[in-house]
Length: 240
Image (cartoon, rainbow, N blue to C red):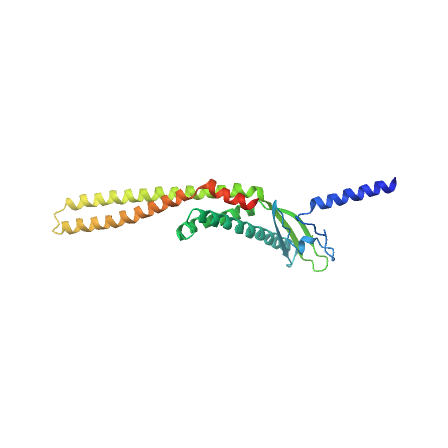
């Protein structure tokens, strides 16, 4: 009976260890040197991004800070790669792959999502090598939160494009107003070159109107191309 109880306890402990494993496939919990296995192989998991960092500085506090920063950066890189892939897939489907201006706007999403991810990273475990005193840190970020961050940044991009478009429209209206005021002032004078001044104003306004209309149209097109739901679909496909 005692042997049976000990066997059951052993099975339960083994099951507990397996359930806590961050890996999709089985790996030993420790290396031959007794260090956690994640210090030699960063876990890959379908539900989380993992990052591992190491610090070996003059004191434990600085070493831990360095290790945590390294772990966060590793997660941010993984997130950036995934978001960049999602953006490229979307821009390819939307026929924007060769549009440099559009791609530059979309690429800002990757950086912003990576920054958002860094704020939500969880430090899971810390290990100090008894010989070298180096400190290792493993951190993680749940993938289920990524679509939310991605959607928020896509919507933010859309709002920023709308603000820039409105600002361009207002700038064009102001230019026309000032041009009209200048014409009025010229007409009140008896200048001999009045006609030349009026022609110069007309040409200047024509240039401003042409440039602003192009800017407004480009911003309008970029705003229309930020189809948040379609972009989100591309990301969700990669997360499956």
